Image (cartoon, rainbow, N blue to C red):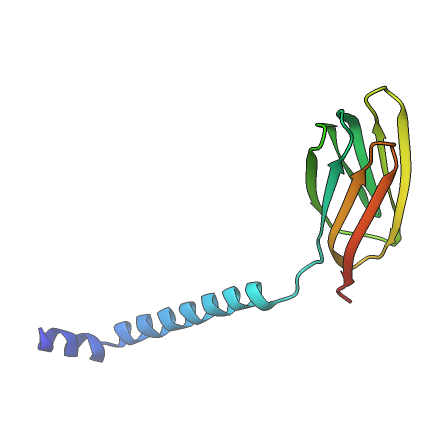
Length: 138
């Protein structure tokens, strides 16, 4: 067995293979480290909470650069959605309460590059409470 491994170590093809394998492993390590430590886009984790005693319907949130929504949020339920802020502008929510009345409420100004959490609470009187916990990534 010793003779066989000695022959492998002295073989030029084996040395080249080992070197290529080491380079491959190094490249993989660099890729993984850059993915873990590298630049990342800022995300906002939005949570829309319905504090009413009845469902709210046709919920649509318009943020700088896009919209998201859900058909209905049950009474005392919530809906979560992650998004990127793509411009500077205010956020807005539109929804229909249980009686069918349409509501539109403007929220805080958001800036491109901000990330963190945003809680949007629909209160029983139809008012909306905005709780942003955002930090600038720039």
